[in-house]
Length: 143
Image (tube, rainbow, N blue to C red; front, top):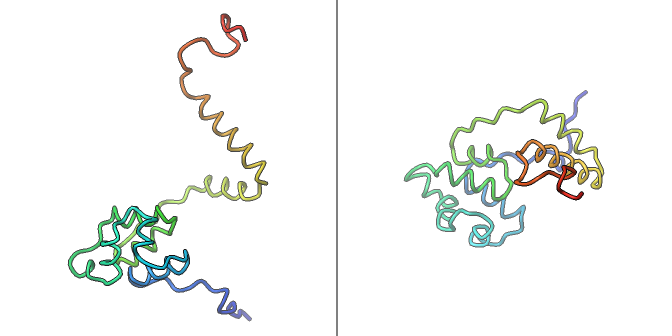
């Protein structure tokens, strides 16, 4: 028999309006005002006030660029932000290889993550054209 998880373990319902979304963000982050929230985003406080009151939605839909910036600034799910604004959002395609790498990454220790990141950067930088002058170990470098 499938029993639902306890209420405190269920994800809260997705906000239906931008006002509900702003309230959730503020509660989650501990912000006490929209002005404080605005200081953590690139969205002007006047815009946040209009989103919260719903006046922006009655006049015109919120700008997608501002919704995207808001989600990115706060590392909030972009799809949730767009849906709260009443706009459609096409979820980006998920690359199966990226999912596998993400799964492996989560299993590494912090030291292993730093080492892996350095290795990846070295691999990427190795594909770039060398800087002017002889490379390390070439004649004339003295190395």
